[in-house]
Structure formats: structure tokens, C-alpha cells
Length: 168
Image 1 (spheres, rainbow, N blue to C red):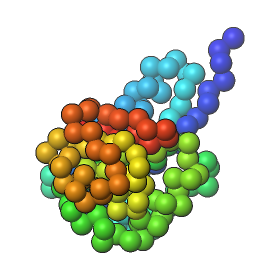
Image 2: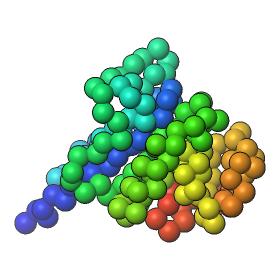
Image 3: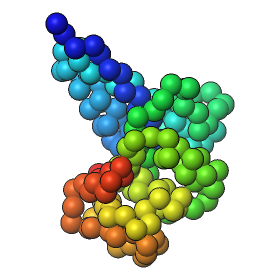
Image 4: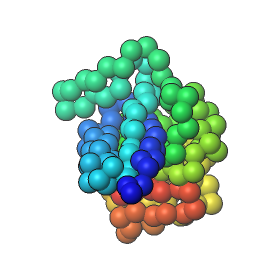
């Protein structure tokens, strides 16, 4: 008898001017994992806007989501990822998003970032005392801006408890 499908809700938080690859790469991985599982796994991936209205503006493409932001449907979210953006240097300016992240990470069993999405987690204080990584070109800046984080610049990904960060 085939095992019952267990759906996992994934939220990908999309910062301003997010890198398309950092959004759609993880999304496609979860879609393909669902397809290849033969019905034993299901991932329900949702994009979460950091800015009002526009979710992605990169490479000339725009994806609109209406007027709400920081919304995840009421079903439990099992994973939360923050996508990278070339605008990571402005991560501290998104104070509403930082507060939202701090509230959400206590509700999810796993959370993390893709590439420079780590700067948004750092701005929210979520990297303090944790082993983390980001793209090698920005690792020194991540370490300088968030000195309480233990940045590992030569790692492709780092798992520290429920926190996962990747180099991109």
C-alpha cells in the first residue's frame, strides 16, 4: 500500500529585486521532488512579498501578488527561505520584515536563506551565535555587518540546528 502523501508548506520570502535563480531554483527543486516522489511527498511552495505589490523585479521580469505582504496562508508552514537580492545592503531598512521574520521562525521547524538572503536574516538578529554562509563575494561583509554570526566563507551550505544557509 502506498504511503499517504504528507504535504509540506514552504514559504519563500522575496526581497526587493530578488535574484530569479534564488526564488525559482528552490521552487523548482520542491516541484521536482514532489513529482519524483511517486506520490509520497508533496511540497506546497508559496512566495511571500517583502514589498507591497511587487514580488520580483529582476532581469526585466515582474511578478505581481496583489496588495498584501508578509502573508502566508493559515496552514502550518514547515520551511521558510529568504531569497537573495543584489539589494541586500538595504536589509536593515526593512524593519517590518525583520519583525515578521522573528515571529515566523519560532513557528517553523526549518528556516534559512539562499545566497545574500542571509543579510535579511542577519538584520533580524537571526544569525547571532550561529554558523552560516553566503556567497563568497559577500562573506566578509556579512561577517563585518553581523559580528555575532560565525561566517564560514568556504562552505556551499551550512546547517546549524534549524537554520540552513547556502552560498547561492
